[in-house]
Length: 438
Ligand code: ARG
Image (tube, rainbow, N blue to C red; front, side):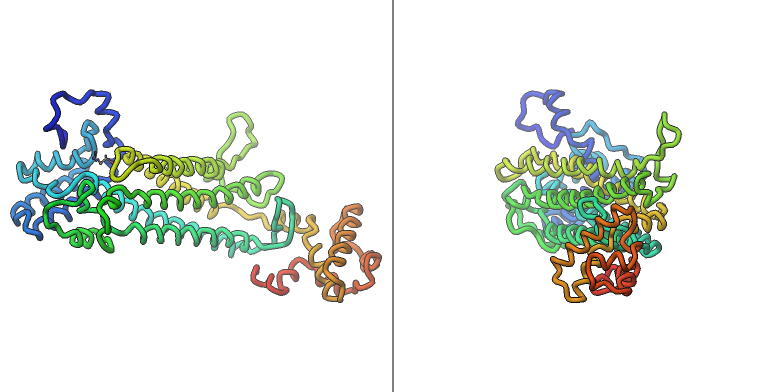
């Protein structure tokens, strides 16, 4: 069954039918579609367009369809054009001619827009909750393993930090991600239902009623914008892309840290995989997959930006492309957040290896310069002296704290016995604003 056809003389070509059909993927909107239709029917009745009996019949029919889909009794049939057609056709099958009144004062254009908005609103909330779970996992892992570790710039050992501080950097990135998602929900939360195809309807419908029942702040201001706006898809795809970028950076670090070269962390067997040929291998596939899937989510964003850029107002069929991209990106970001929670919560942090890396990295060279500045030397001169000491130690193959006071004094007479206390790694983080790192 089709929802159109009166003005056609020939049947739709089979290739065209398949090409046009979206039910394979928009079946995911069945719950929202029933919810949106129910609100529409309540409103039609409140506005005197449907009578009580008609309203009750349609509502009962819709709710039995929903129940049967959920229980598996009613299987969504891919031969229909889309989920809207499938549900309407089933309603008519179940309750007869009254079902044909459901679509009064409505178009599939406002119908699909409201369905997708409700779906996206809910999905964004679920992703925000997953983001929050990962934040908690990162925080706990950091607190349980608050060891010294090298901080890097240019992937060169730079200054001493703690593992917790490093984890909390990601916590803060995710905090912004969460805000972006919640902000996108806030912006999208205006109802397009009642916009009709593009120009409203001649019935005196009450858009505020459907907006309220469906949890929107208000109806959209402009019908044409209401049916042709997919900014909310773009905003969420953009928020998902940034989340994936953050997860990808974290993945990259985990991959490095779990290598034989770093050995800062050991990933749990539960979240690692092996090699078919090399028996000794334990690969960080979870992190690699998250890093890899980042491109896929960026792809969805690029695809939708490109789809939207050239289409005139109002609705165009190009926009049907929104759903596959959105669903795929949503599933990818959700799975990635979940897997990352597992990877982080189960991995072991190797305190001793991180400490060794701290010691071998001249990570207190900046503090040697700070020491001299405290004794009155201008920073630029102190920087030079500290650099000469690093060179001295590099030649001797030892750490700065391992040389004697006499050796320090070769480079400046300002050095005293207290230099050793000053450049001790544990003490460094107790000084100045570095205290925030602890
Ligand atoms: N399947 C369509 C979509 O996803 C539903 C809206 C169809 N509207 C129309 N005028 N053909 O966008």
